[in-house]
Image (cartoon, rainbow, N blue to C red; front, side, top):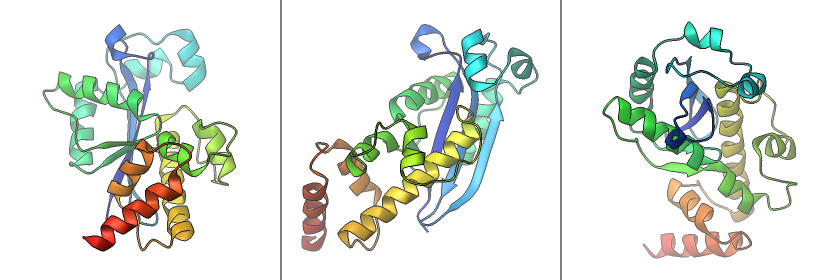
Amino acid sequence: MRERVIIDFETTGLSPRLGDRATEVAAVVINETRIVDRYQSLMNAGRSIPPFIEQLTGISNAMIRKAPAAETVMRQLFAFVGGRPLVAHNASFDHAFLAAELERIGESPVGGLLCSMKVARRIYPEADNHRLVTLVRHAGIAVTGQYHRALADAEMTALLWLRMEHKLQRDFALPEVSLELMQRIQSAPCKSLGRCVDAFKRRACAA
């Protein structure tokens, strides 16, 4: 069965270019219908967490001091992902930290990184906004834990991704939703979902 890995980082700030580091990571594996595996760990990168980040995430400096070294966690994560395609909500943020942390252990980013936020903008244009908390509520998805903790955010992103795939299957009579189609959707103009999917179906039929 097709498997995708949804990934989420919690961090000390917004950018590894500014010296920020990851404090927690989670990865959730999905097949066509459900979550089938999970990985989660706090990680100690030797960087202090600012007070407003502690308040936002609930991850404290005391917790991080007891956590495994970032290099150890990233090696475990790299093995867990195993080259499977990656998905994240606001993927440019997670990709930046993934690339920076993997570079520190001598590895390159694995697989492609699709963005559930970009896809949701095309599939749910009527949503108030496309933050994860709004989309979970909009799509009627169960809240699995505390927002701004890596495992809960990864799980809810996974359930959102599955919900969007199933909506595409229903709305456009698709036997399955491939990663190639999701890549095309996330790059398409926001108001051209139907044209994008129809063009993809015509190419698939002609192949």
